Every structure is written in structure tokens, then in C-alpha cells.
Amino acid sequence: MCTGITIAWRDVPAKLIQKHQLEERIIQRSETAEKEILFMQRHRRPLLPVFYQGELRILPWGNRQRNINAPLAQWCDLATLESGAWSMYHPEPAEIQANFGLERGVWFQIREGIKAILIHDQHEQPHVYMLLQPASHYYQVMTGYEKEPLFLGEQI
Amino acid sequence: MGTRFIGHIDSDCFYVSCERIRSYSLRGVPCGVLGNQGACVIAKSYELKSYGVKTGHPIWEAKKLCPHAVFVKRDFHWYEVISRQLLDLLKTVSPQVEYYSIDEMFFDASELQRYFQLPLYEATRALQTLVQEQVGVPVSIGIAPSRTLAKLGSDASKPFGVRVIEKECEPFLRSQPVGELCGVGSKSARKLHDRNIHTCWDFRKADRLMIRNLLTIKGEALWWELQGDAVNPIQTTRPPHKAIARGGSCGGKTTDPTRIRAWAVRNIERLIEALDHHRVYARHISLQIDANKTALWLGRTPLMVPSASFRMIYDAVIPMLDAAPTTHPVSHMHIIAENLTWRDKIQRSLFFEEAQSPLDQLKRNINQKLGRFAIRSAETLPLHEIYHDATHNYDICDVSGKMCF
Image (cartoon, rainbow over all chains, first blue to last red; front, top):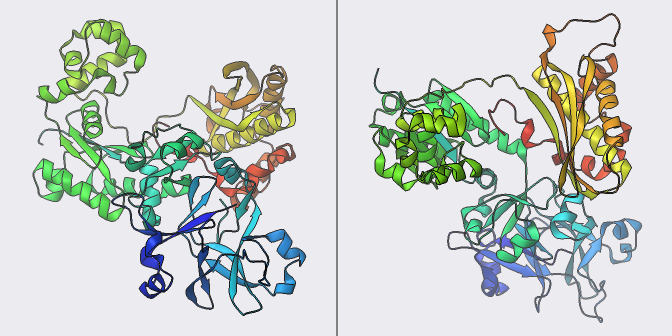
């Protein structure tokens, strides 16, 4: 499962960086590379940059709390979604904005973004779940994992 | 007419540079481009190289050496677009350009000064800037009286360098090991070392006939080229192929006979496409497979008539494949068409089938219209993962017109 993504620092408005204290997540892969903001599933407060209702927002990545009425997960399998198993949560489409993704220690390029669903819990708080699909042969060889994110406009 | 100069332009980490044109976020990032199966690094940025990652390294080793590196899926179609842009740009500044490989070109540099209205070194710098601005890839350029010296110059000035070499260039040649010469492999280098020839200057000062005896006429040509005499001219069109091969990795080792046969049929279909493209027929078909890390030459079958017919090539390949040992896993396979003949120069026969059947022609027409492999043999069905991913449809060997691989 894709356990992390980064987005270019320049693509995130300063007010969002400040509001969500994203400065501590800034990384740079080399001196000449541009700054990126890191979003990991293992972070204490897992977040994702999501394009939803016409603007970029920083929203919680899935749900880890049992008392919240949203699936206890970070990812959603496309087949499960299509089977209707999540329909009780009224999922809405959303797009995760990302430049690079991380899978089993391999960073890969993401050209446009990743498809996701957004669910509101009983307090009307949004939770974002990354959509997964069976991995292509290429992705499987590259990362060693059998599921890959549902990318926008491409399949790796 | 002034002194004649030959230029060699070589793109710096070409595949990565192409990816950086369309993806700004890759700039400055340690980046590797992965090969056809997603397993091996086929190109790397200088940032990744500094971590010790080499071309051919498997990804699981590369990610250990540089855990924050980013890996990109290859896209040969895009690389060809950029390569042809570079070729077209060079043709505007030079009357003669040789498309040597996807990222390297030789050109007649005699007109550079007149074109840019600058001295030679500054004109070469101007060309480098022009390429960077208009194509978007960084290049290194060598200018010299011969192509061997020009290539040596561009290789030595990487990355993003320029070097102009005159006939008298002793300090430069002394600094270059003889193994850096294009055409001197490890075996030849050993032979030269045995005769106390270690640098390109030693090679230039060596006895010409001794070099000829040691490295044949090709070695002698190198000797002349190092003197500054251009004996290997710029070739603006590719000479006809002596053989055409299609093949490569079988997507990992396999002993499954249906998958091995599927790869053979896929390679036959790719080979027929190449024969169609070059307007030639084959008289002989050879098959080579790599089983258990050993290249097995499985034979050479003559065709009854020069042909590019699927049925005829299939009937030649499959018996050779069936004769292969089945116990060893197969990792690579190559099908080679040899003794090629132009299509308009064959003797037609009353007794054998046509060089291409109506079915072959129909398949070609449909695939040209609807896309590669829109119609393909049902025997390739076990390779669903390959055909499912459209990027497998275009390989480096599909970039036509270049002199070498």
C-alpha cells in the first residue's frame, strides 16, 4: 500500500502550511531540488493534500479512532467500493494532489494525482481514503506489492 | 573553405533530462529511469550516480544506496520526440548530421562560426545554450578534426561541458586512458596495455602497422582519427541492416512452455513489423535464448523464399524452440532475421506462397489504423500483463534511423 506521498512546497498555499503546521514536514531530496511537504500514513496526525470542492485542502488521512463513524482504514479497495460495501458512508470523489509516492521503500513519480474518496463522520468531519486497484506487472516488479493507487490519467 | 571540424553532441543523462522537461519536480532530485520490467535502472541522474547507483542496478539495490531517490517508468516514445527535436535543431546549424544514437549525434561543425558569428569555442557554447533553451536537455559538445577526437572531447567534458580539440592536443590525449576510445573494448585495451600503450597519446604515437596487426583495419582507422585525419565520415543515412533482431527479457525467468511460446510469437510479430518498416524480407531466421544464464544458440533456419510472412517465420522458429532444453528457466530470447533482401528485388515464385499473405497485410493495415497489437496472435494471450500496459508497445529499438542501438 502506498504509505506516503509528497507534494511540492510551492503548490501549497502559505496559509495552509501555517494552519496545519506543515513546516515540520518539509523535506528536500538534494540541495538543488525543490522543497516538498511529506505526508506519511505513519505520522501521528496522518494528513493528505486533497483537491475537494474546487480547492486544495489538508484533510485527515483515513480514520484510526473507533468512536468515529468512519471506516477504520487509510485505503479503500476500488472493488470493495464498487461492490457497495462503503455506500452507507456516502463517499464522495476527491483527488489527492501529489508529486511522488512511496511504496515499500520505493519513491515513484505521480504525474497528476491519485483518486480518493471522502467520507464525513457523525461530526461532519471529513476523512480521505486513497483508492487502490490491483497492481500492474510493472508496479508489482518495481515495488514488490500487489496493489497500486488509482492514479489520475495513468497506470504505472 | 577553412579547417573542417566534426562535432559530437551528447545529451547528459538523456532519459532523466527528458523526464525533467515535462516534470519540473524532478529537477535536482536523485532520479532513476527503470527498464521494461520495472526492475533495473537503465538511466540515472548525476545526483543518483553520486550515491553509487549504476546503470543495470536492480531497483532493490538502488533504493538501499539512495533511499530518497525517485524512480520513473521509461517512456521511449517521449524520448524519441525529444531526440528528434534535437536532431532537427542540429540540422538547422549544420549541413550534415549523423543520427548516431537516441542521445548522440555527429555533425559537420565547419559552419558553426559563420552561423553564430562567433569564434569556434564561443559558437559551440552558443549551440549548447540554444539546445538547452529550445529542446530543454543539457548537452556536452566536443569539436575536433575527426569524429573519434570529437567524441573523446564531449565524453571528457561531461556534464554540460564544451571542448574544442585541435590537431595538436598532446596534454589532452595524455590525460585520456586508451580504454576511453570508442571502439576499444576491454579485450583490445588489454592487448594495448601489453604493448605499453596506456593513453590515447601512446596510441597516437604507436607504430601504425603494429596497431593494424593488433586491432585490424578498425584499429588503424582509430589511429588515423587520433592523428586528426577524419577517415570515418559523417553518415547522414543509415546503411542497410545486415540483420534485424527483436527480443529481450521474458519478464523474469520462466519454464512455462505456454509463456515461452507466447514470448516467441510476440517477438515474431515485432520482427515482422520491423521487416515491414525497413521494406525487406528475410532469407534466414535464427533463434537465441538465455537459459540458466547461458546463451543458447538454437539454430538458423533457411526460409524457402525470402519472406516476412508470419506463418513462414513461425514455422521456422517454433521447431527451434521445441528443441530447446525445457529444464532450465528462460530469461531472454532473441529472434534474428538475416540475409535480408529488398522487397522490390526478389524473384517471385509460382510454387511457394507469397512473401506476405493477404492475412499479414490485413493485420498490418488494421494495426496501423487502430494501434500496435490491436490484432495479434492468440498465442500471446498468456502475456496479458504485457499487453495490458500500453507503454510496453514502444521500445528503444523502435526508434528508427539511428546508427547504433
